[in-house]
Image (cartoon, rainbow, N blue to C red; front, side, top):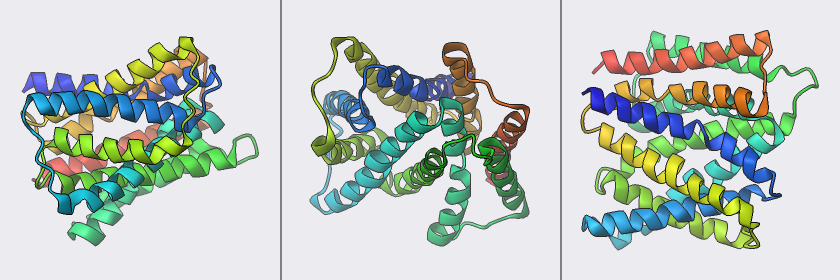
Amino acid sequence: MRKGYALVFLAASMWGTLGIFAKLLYGYNLDPFTIVFFRASTAFFLLLLYNNFRDDLNLKKDKLKFYAFYGFFSVFLFYVLYFYAVKLSSVSLAVLLLYTAPIYSTIMGYLIFKERITPMKLASLGMVLVGVLFVTELNGSVNIVGIILGLLSGFTYALYGILGKIAVREESPGEALMYTLGFGTLFLLPFTKFSIPMGAIPYLVALGVFPTFLAYLMYNHALRDIEASRASIVATVEPVVALILAYLIFHEVLSMRQIFGASLIIFGALLLQYEESISK
């Protein structure tokens, strides 16, 4: 049991480095499409080796359209929107806006899976919405486009989870992730520039290996030992790690108003996951 929680903590901590990698790679004048292409393609080929070794490749032809849809919205759009949000705003703001995902997840869960919207869920969503208003500080000092892209990344992040629930009904999590990344890589290919500075290559490889391939494997492995809802609570450490690293590496500092908003978003996400854990 403790091993499962440790794996989730490590996975979420790795996800918290995504914005850091983005900022570092922007220093080499790489665009978001190129960055996320190498992230997705590196993880895809590692998963191809991993699944082939486990003899876990059983995709049915009738699922190709589903994974094309999944790869477009949950890799192509999600990755690009998030990395553009980091570029136009900051690591801190982008990761906090990403955590508006529970709002969309709750709404889509109700519409698609007929999941109940309880008073605790409404309270959680209210906290997240108010938190967003505080962290964005719409007073002309922030990039409006960056905020919009950050909110859209939250939507596509939520869609990733919704589609994932459907995918793992027939495929293993590792196999489903591989197909999704494969299609996402294909959609990214036409927009990718392959003239990469040598200094950027180690960061691109690390981006594909640690917060993508290894993080997802750790998280999926942890789900064998602990409930998904409890794992989601521990995974809320991701924005905390991102905020700390953004401060230590790029000296990004949140105002007191934004810190209050950040607390509401993170606590709202925790409350929602806690409500799900006690309802099972």
